[in-house]
Length: 251
Image 1 (spheres, rainbow, N blue to C red):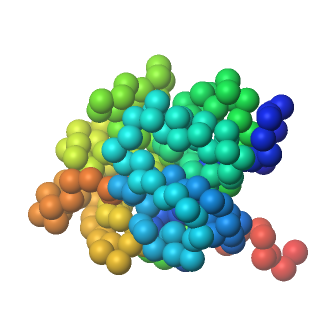
Image 2: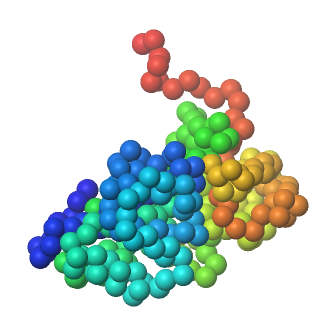
């Protein structure tokens, strides 16, 4: 959706979700914009360069080492020149993409912007496992959250609080704290609850570790996973005998 503001130049900053890693898991719209925008700013630590193949931009900047002020300055410079910008983030930019702070700054500068959604790491991880995250009678709720390490969680959003729902969990940015996560979840999910940890879902070097809350921490440590991994927790990962949905029922 485009958010238009009164400007002196006709340009737009496109916040584009590049998907989880596989360059083919970007939307057609996102790919078209990357190939047509004269300026590209991309989060190089998480977005593979394969996503940028076919671009005709005269300026391509990896923003991995830039702070917010430097990024906004680049957007402001493009705006002054009337140049559209492909601002490329990993996954879907609405989830842990830090676009809110960028939008707040450029809105004050009256720079138009549009957000183009992308495939999430959660969706890519479920696909890698060949699993549905919502099953009748097992779980009809998926909670996407992160583990509170450097960034604290708002009241009521601590992992132990969310675990009380016993819904399917997708936990970002937490694999380094897998032991603490297990401790928070055990009282609510039980030792036999299935867990899957997916490292760099959809990338060529993707790795998967599967187990239960009883043994997943040991398996993760043995695999050497320390970052860029998503943790999926829930009975849907190893469910048997669940009821068919009503979607394709004869009646």
